[in-house]
Length: 77
Image (cartoon, rainbow, N blue to C red; front, side, top):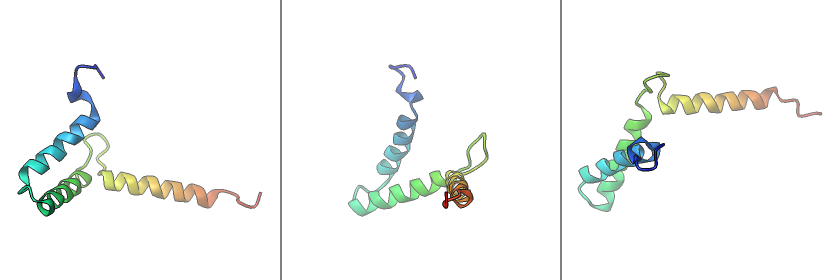
């Protein structure tokens, strides 16, 4: 990532979404909390352009793969 191009940084892109949610809230603590919850829920349910998986689905697949790997491990040796 070029040092003077923060738009290319994934963390900056995520913070842009959070900033918009806060600006759209009514600026009360409960309003900001609710706005962030809704923004995160929308983000987690939006499919990725390349994989077609939502972050929720990808996380569940990753966790299931780790659980399956643990089940296959021979713990007796």
